[in-house]
Length: 157
Image (tube, rainbow, N blue to C red; front, side):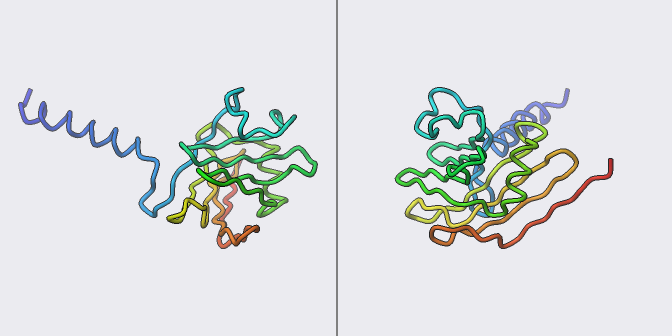
């Protein structure tokens, strides 16, 4: 075997591993992946919502989707020093997405853009649910959310 390949191959794998391990995208967003809710997640969980919520997390940032069809419904964003509840950014889509569920644990995720104070400025939600895939880009405006871009592609069955 060529000695150069023995030198280059490990470097390639280290580069590949490092690029996969990063959770910050090139646009300054931090990726939050789905996490199955456990007892240790009590700080995020309101009473009686374990069966009607999804948790996405990355270190100190978390997004909790609550879809219990009551007053607690909506999107909760948790940061290092803050917690904010928002109404759905597209209620019809949000309730459909949470009721259908993602095709796999990795097929739905959030990317959050935060400011220097650790507050979320905007986020992207990527999804692949049933035969539909796409994204929503949402701006955080104080206590409300505004969709600034979205795309949904339905794949033929």
